[in-house]
Length: 292
Image 1 (tube, rainbow, N blue to C red):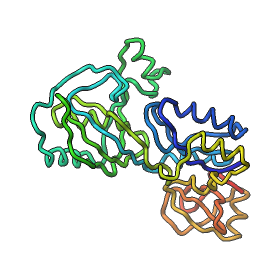
Image 2 (cartoon, rainbow, N blue to C red):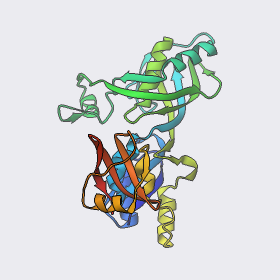
Image 3 (cartoon, helix red, strand yellow):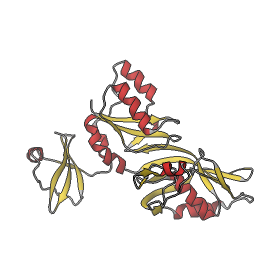
Image 4 (cartoon, rainbow, N blue to C red):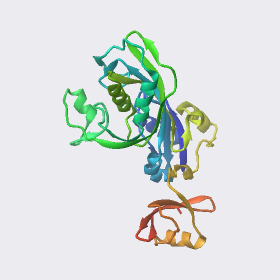
C-alpha cells in the first residue's frame, strides 16, 4: 500500500496518536506524517504510506497555512489556550486597527523564533516540555523561519480586559504559530497568546478535502481506498522535470544525468509518474531517492 492521505486531525490527539490509529485501520506499519500538530490544534495532517514515507521530508518543506485567533491581554505557560495564565496587561482602550495591521505586516519575511518551553524541541537530549514540567529552565536554541503571509481576517472583539481577533498565516516548516502570536502581542505592548488554531493547508492538501480517522475507517471497511492519493502528491515544492526513457534507465542504476535546470533538487517524472528525487552535483544530477 503506497500513497498520501489528507487526514483531518481532531483535537485531543497527538500526531503520533493519529499515525498509531491509522496503522491499525490500514493494517500496515510503514506510515509517517508530514508535519507535527499540537494536540489542541485541528486540521490537515499529511500522512505518507508505504513508499511515500521516503517523501516526508519534502512534504514538510512546503509552506503551511493556518487560521486561528490571537488574544491580547494575558499570556499563558504554553503560549496557547491550554496553559495556565501567567501575565496580564489589560486592554483598556480601543485598539487602532490600522496600527495592528501594520505591526502584523511587519512580521512577514524572515523571523528569528525562540521555541516555547512547552514544545518537543530537544536540548541536551531532553525535550523542552520535559524541562518545563519539572520546573526547570534551559537556554532555548533560536531558529530561523519564514512568514510568507500574515493578516488579520476579522474584527477585533473586546471581552472584559481582553481583545481577540482572527488571523491567517502561511509559514515555513518549523514555525511556532503560538510564538508568533506572543511576539505580535509584545510588539503591540500586550501579553498575549494563541487562543485557537486550525491548519487549513499543508503539502498541497486542503482542509475541505480532509477525512477524519472515523471516515477513513468507514471507507476501509467498505474496501474503498480512494482516499489514498498517488505518491506524486508528496514532492512538496520541488521543481518537476520530465525525464527521457534513456535518463530513466540511467537513474535506475544510480548514474549521473544532465538536466537543463539550475535547481539544487528536482523531482524527475516520466509519463506522469515520479521516478526519482535528484540532487545537483557540480553540473549534473545524481539520484538521491529512486522510486522505480
